[in-house]
Image (cartoon, rainbow, N blue to C red):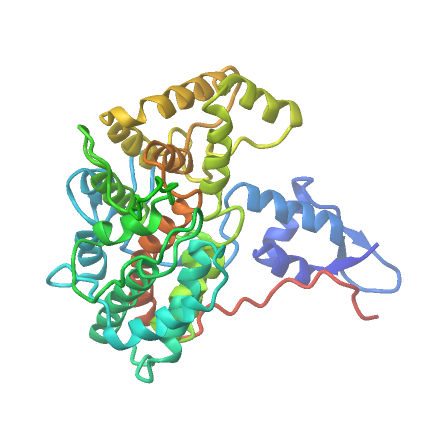
Amino acid sequence: MQYLTVAETAERLGVKRETVYAYVSRGMLTSVRSAQRRGSRFAQDEVEGLAARGREAGEPSGSVERIRTSISLLGDGGPYYRGVHAGDLARSGSLEEVAGLLWETSDPPEFRADPGLLEVARGTLAALPSGARLTDRIRVAVAAQAAADPLRADISEVAVTRTAAALLGTTIAALAAAPRTGCGDRERPAADATPGPIADRLWPVLVRPAPKMPGSHRTATTAPASTGPGPIRLLDAALVLLADHGLAVSTVAARVAASARADVHAVVSAGLGALDGRDHGLVSSLAHRFLAEAMDDPVAALGDRLRAGVRVPGFGHRIYRGPDPRAQVLFALLREDPTAERVLTAVDAVVAGMARGPSPEPNVDLALAAFLHAHHLRADAGEAMFAVARTVGWVAHALEEYREPGLRFRPAGVYVGPRPD
């Protein structure tokens, strides 16, 4: 059994020494005295248990919880971007307008590709295996542009917003020029650096390759006709809803990089690395796979998950006690789209089945998966949408972090190993 002194216990719990004694008087800690050592000592396991209960109660544990930000506000009705409801922006705005709002620029950025860096990114992506995921390609394209930009260390606000706009525009242009996979499709026509709506340019990247008819060389790279809000409008709405979500783990990673005065390429790379976790940016792909099974028999698909005792992807969120507001907006838009009727029928059946118990509400990952199925997008399209949209948020947080003292995220850590005699 390892024991901690009063000072060590106070440090571990993040309280004053007097508070430690107050915990003893309330029966929350047991004080142990030793004939060999002066002063009270406390069993390390008991202290760790009390610290864990504090974390579960949401008590601040370090500098991350004390980040002051004016970028987004989360709540049961949110998120809000600088005081503007993200749902309102999703229904009528674009990712460009949200970038202008979050980056506080006078005009929305055009996301114009840099011709020189575009060639570098294209050449680098060409070396990847054809089956590489879209988010793998995005990470590689960002790294390639960083290596080819000798002036990337400039972190002045003007330079950061210009570089970030070019970074995103160049990355999407490089992806649009990359080879398609499946059914012998030819390469996409080379994308140029001409600006245009980001959703229009991203759509061909996300479309699932379709089998070609005999004698035809055409592929499905344009949005299908729709009597609802239209797939491009839905894509733009989804990008807006995903642009920022407070201090998500990938955003914290991006801010830590910015605190070290890393350039914007490195900040985005840090965010992309954290986003690639199975509990963060990859959940939409898991929800897509689940819905693929549920489209044929929703009850059976849900029953299989429940019987196996595994989590049903696309439900629950650590921030919201009730429904995910982003999912509500995207589902509402999908219900105006006749092409989404079949997948929404499956979603409704799954939600009804989950509601039999004290189950969590649908989240934005389930809504993304429904969008992907409704418009025959790639299984990893949701991940790519997350990466593209959240880049806008990471840049906003980097701009905010650059104004703070550098290297402020240096926690002392809590040593829980053997204590020296």
